[in-house]
Structure formats: C-alpha cells, structure tokens
Image 1 (cartoon, rainbow, N blue to C red):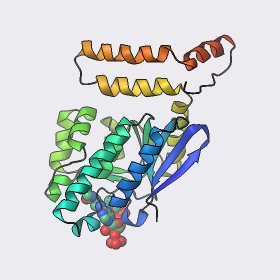
Image 2 (cartoon, rainbow, N blue to C red):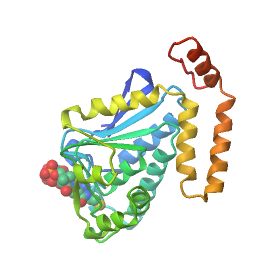
Image 3 (cartoon, helix red, strand yellow):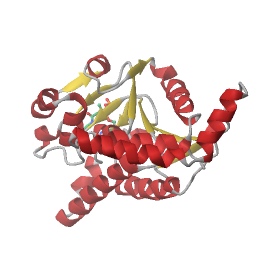
Image 4 (spheres, rainbow, N blue to C red):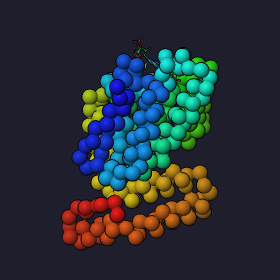
Length: 259
Ligand code: COA
C-alpha cells in the first residue's frame, strides 16, 4: 500500500497526502522512500508549480516518527531512518517548487519538522503542534531545533523544545509558525487556493525567489544582496519575463511556460 497519495490538480498543483490515518500519518521507512521518489520526480517536472503537503483525516497532519516501527528497529536501522528523514526534509526545502503544508491536525516531532521544511504553513483551527522529543529521551533531529529557531526566534524555539509542550493553532499563528488558520473542512481548499495563487506566477521567478530568501537569510547583508542579484539576473534572460511585459501591454494575463 502506498503511504503518499498524489493528486494532480489543474494549474500544475499537486496535493501530496500522507495516507496512514490509523497511525496518525506517522513517518515510516516506506513513507521516506516514497517521499524521496516523488521529490526526485518533482525536481524533473517543469510543469509542476506548487505542492500542497497534508495528512489524511482530521486528527493528525503527522504524529512524527512511527514509534511502533521504531520499537522493532536496531540501532543501525534507527541511524538509517534518521539519515533518511533529514535527507527527505532537505529535499523538500531544496525542491524547485514551493511547498505549502496544510496542517489538518496534530503536527508533532518529525511531523512538525516536515512542516518546517515547507515554505508556508496553514493550519486547521483545531490543529496542535509541538516538538516533544526531550520528553522521549532524544532531541528534535530532523532540523527542528534549527528551522524552528530561524522561523520564530531562539527564545520561542527554546520554550517549545525545552518544555516539550504542545501549542494550539492560535498560538502557532501568533508566533508566526503558521501564516493562516482555516476551519478544518475548509483547510485543503484554502491551501490549494494559496498554491494556485503561487502557481500562476513565473516558474523561474518562483524558484529563484525561494533560493534568494532561503540562501540569503544567514549571509552577511552584502553577500546576501549579491546572491539576490545573481538570481535576479537569471530571470532577465527568460522568455517568461518578455511574456509578462507583452501581456501587460496587451492587458491580458501572462501565459508562463517556465522558459
Ligand atoms: N507512531 C506510531 N503510531 C502512532 C503514533 C506514532 N508517532 N502516534 C499515534 N499512533 C497510533 C496510536 O498508537 C494509535 O494506534 P492504536 O489504534 O493501534 O492504539 C493510533 O495512532 C491513534 O492514536 P491516538 O493517540 O488514539 O489518536 P488521537 O487522535 O487521540 O491523538 C495524536 C493523535 C497524534 C495527538 C496522538 O496519537 C499522539 O500524541 N501521538 C504521539 C506523538 C508523538 O509523541 N510523536 C513522536 C514525536 S518524536
């Protein structure tokens, strides 16, 4: 059985649904393999403009590592899993397309770390989030300590990581961990609408803008501006830039091809 359900929509949008509701969409080895597979496919798919990542059902986006599978793992298996998790999350972060996480329920541990690797996060009003690892004798190891601190600041990240507490969607919104809330039944539609707003823009511009923000964030300003300049220059030679100017003059929406 597949662990990741892929639904291609109009406008170059895909919805990737973690399909393990009875295990609260926990991350298994099979899920990591499928994520790798689809990330490789996405990297080569120029028609794919934006991905929405969500979980099946209304209880959990993802409850973190599959703790039942973990209980039967050897130390080597755990190492391999951890390596695979880090690789998959980095793959999301480095994907050419923007990823929108639609947090339909609890996002805990590796589940929240997966959402943190996405570019934007929306949550159902009833969703809860947390990094409970220190209560389980480990620390967040899928980038959570780093990405959360970069996103919401060191003090808030320490509050969440050191207490292991779970926060409500409203608190997550207040600290900027998610950017929008929606009633549960409307969440996916709103996430797809956001993806559609993103996907109608020029594909090369989207890729370069994502790289500019992510790549420049921790550089000294001078270097970051230089990075932005290089990525900007790459856009100047595209057919889509010419098409945007022509469409403006002709008072019509542009038709972008990604070239
Ligand atoms: N790994 C494997 N199975 C998991 C799981 C996980 N991380 N989280 C939940 N499940 C399983 C439960 O064991 C249960 O299985 P069962 O029906 O065979 O007993 C099933 O999913 C439903 O769990 P339940 O707790 O009854 O669901 P809920 O909707 O009331 O609560 C959560 C959902 C996600 C809030 C809750 O399951 C939870 O807190 N899970 C643990 C999260 C966690 O600590 N993750 C590890 C981070 S490192």
